[in-house]
Length: 396
Image (cartoon, rainbow, N blue to C red; front, side, top):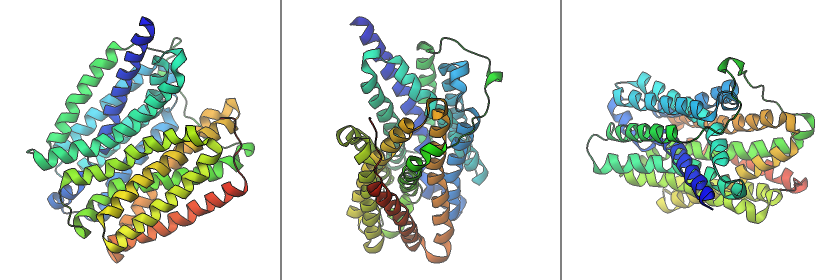
C-alpha cells in the first residue's frame, strides 16, 4: 500500500510537470491583441505566429518522437523544459515579429518532446494496478495544462503590471521548479541507448488500417482545427465584434474548450470507441453551428457554448480516433500509424488557421470564420456519414 501511494505521488508530480510545459504553449493566446497594438501586424501574422508552433511539434514527432525510448524519459523531458524556458525568454525579449516566431517555434519543440514522452512517463510512474486512472491523469494534465495557459496569462495581463512580460516570467519560474521536481523523479527506461541510435520515424498507414484511419483522421483534423481557431483568433473576435477587451475573460473562453475536452474524453469510456467517433463528429458539427451563430449575431453566449461543445466533441473524436487506430494497427506499425494521426491533428491546428488569417484581410474576420466553418462542416459530415455506414468495430 505504501509503495502504491509513493508511485501515485510520483505519477501526479510527473503530471504536474507535464501540465506546466503544456501551459506554456497556450500562454500567448490572450496577449496577441496586445502584440498587434505594440508591433502593428495584421490578423494574418497572428495566425502565422500561432501556426509556427504546430510546425515545431510536427517536426519533433517525425524526427525524434521515439527518442525517449532510447535515451530515457527524463533527459528528453529536461530538454523539453529547456526549450520551454528558451521560449519564455524569447517572449520576454520580444521587440518584433522575429522574436514571436522564435518563441512559438521553441514552444512547439518543447510540446513535441513532451507529447509522447510525458504521456508514457506518467503511465510508467503509476502502480501497475492503476493503468486506467493513470491514463486519465495523462489526458487531464495535458488538456488541463493547455487550458491553464490562457487563464494564467489573461488574469496577469488584466489585473497585474507588465502584461507582456509577467506571464512569461511566472512561467519561467514554474519551468525551473518543474526541472527540480523532474530530477527527483526516477527514470523508468531500464535499458538506455545512445542518442545516435535514434532514427527519424517514417509515419505510414498500412492498407488494412486505412478504412479506420481515414474518418478518424478527418475527425481529429476538424477537432484540432476548431481548437486552433479558438486559441488564435477568438480573442480578436471577442474584442472587435463583441467589445470584450478583458484579457481574463478572453483567456477563460479559450480555456473552456480545453477543459471540456477532458469531459469528452471521459465519455469515451461510457459510450465505447465505436459510438464515440460518430458522436464526436456530430458534436463537432453542433459546435460549428453554434460558432456560426456567434459570428452571425455577435453573441458572447454562443461563443461560450461553442467552446464547451467543441471541447466535448474534440475529446470524444480524438480519444475515439486514437483508440480505434491503435487497435486496428499491427503491433510493429502502431507507433508509426499513431505518429501519422498526430501529424494530421497538428496540421489541423495550423493550416486552417492560416487560411482564416489570409481571408480575414479581404473579407473580414467574421466572414473568414464562416468560410472556415463551412469547410469544416463538410469534412466532419463526410466523416460522420462514413462512420454511420461503416461503424468502427473494436474491443476497446
